[in-house]
Length: 186
Image (cartoon, rainbow, N blue to C red; front, side, top):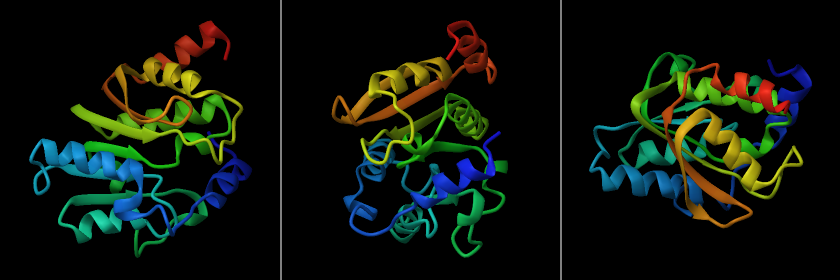
């Protein structure tokens, strides 16, 4: 479980401004996916790690998508975040600037377990892994490998080699990451 200090560090990275709404690459990829499936009105979306003001999720709702925002720590604001969001399941779960602010492998495992908990068997997870800020010294290749421990299928759908956007689906059993991590001694 993340410590109070780890949560504070992650909360401090919340941002709003230039890369919000249509300009942000991860939500743009979510829009592409949902629109390709003709699911704007029917598919459910969770913005996991939505930030203090849940700008991405609010823009989705404003544009007619069915999206809820989830946040943790001191960033939770009932005006923007749904306190019951983790009790539902979603067609698409996305995390914009979330993977990169995890500070340990155990935080990544915990985060991915939470994501998988709210996914349906047919759901997808879309997440970016930007260069800044990165709170762990790992490569995009390492993060891709970690995601492959949690999901049967992981594809890079955007970004670049150092800062990819991943699309993942087909969840493994919840404890799969921990078992393999133990074997690899991460």
